[in-house]
Length: 76
Image (tube, rainbow, N blue to C red; front, side):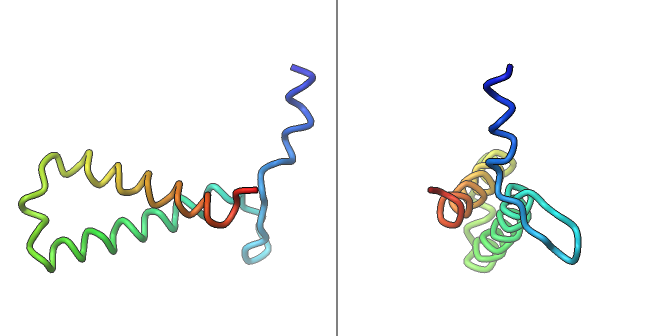
């Protein structure tokens, strides 16, 4: 347990309007917005009705977008 304590400061933290947010919250919000954009594109192209298991597909899209944002901006 004592070896874990120094790792508490490893998460990037940002000041947003005077409040401090961990970077993963920002990645989740951006991933959600990107998932909505992907859904809109699929709906406009007519591919959305042909998508099987929509909940699982959009959850996967959300995970991919959030993880990609994390890797692009916060990987070392």
